[in-house]
Image (cartoon, rainbow, N blue to C red; front, side, top):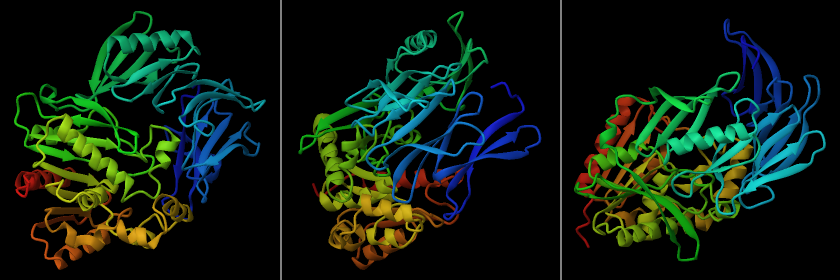
Length: 498
């Protein structure tokens, strides 16, 4: 913090063969850089002490083992201090205090992540806090000492737990959360003495505002909006929901409705991507706001396999792509129809990546439930996952597929929409894809389109973007996407077969 000429910057090469991470000391005035350290395992991130002397590296090897290493001095070797199964447990390093104490979130010995301190000298671990139901979604650090003083949890709207580590900053965070209730709070920077904090405040109806918080005066001064030009008066709120699945598992999610008094044209179910280790969060969501502004309600489901609800919940999604995960999405849809009063004749499903896969797989599992299906950059041929794209090109990628998707040829066939296109003839389908997609190659969409055409599908629509990948990054392309999606929903949201 006392070096005003340099920053530490981590980077990784754009090649599947060179997967180690490198830490550089970069001169902010002339751009010159000096290599500080190279990670001992692939796909690593770094945490440094305040003076930059002590380093911690967290990464995973080709067998999906997550490994934690420390480097105590400039010339010392990396020393491994932890290793664990990366798909079922994890350690997240947060900060190093006094060159000796490493604050971490550790789920290697508990189902949900436990806040803990590792003494790098003795190797001893001291536990600070564990929430048995949920993993934290954010970590509150004291800007000067870098001690962990609080945790954010999202079972619904963000809630905060404070730890007795640095009472001055606990008081500051309490003041901030009390002054701005119902928001997600992030301290993004601070003055050197910690007397002034820059605070980012976000919510379901606020894409983000920055404030300057004066700790001594306990006052706020507005600085700027993260996203200008959005009409905040017409944004709608997102409601956290939960229900119990047919096999007695609590499933969480969110419902977003159009403005009060507005006509609800129908419900759009949007499964998130991943599926393993990813989740939806409460907060501002552009896509939800676009759909709600045009009369559509939205259901998001943190199905089994999602992160945030413990290791065992996440493991329940392994090799269940086409079965148990889809059952959670389907049961959530039926729950929303009954409990929230949505018209069962007016329900569509739309998602990206794994969500795109689910958009076509769920109607196969529950025929007649969805009026239409929109798959965006989806995977539809599971055996193809082992042949094309950036995942099978790495040993770690192949090991991930074996763990997450499985190798049972019968299941891969049964769980692939491309082999069951004839069963989708009564469901209007819209396929959207980027032709330069490295994660879910365009071949998935081409094969799905061919299969649907061979089945004489009566209501198939496609939209392919020549220069886009696994998602759309050009503003004009995103505008085309949403115009097309809204038009398709308007045309097909009503199921006349009910």
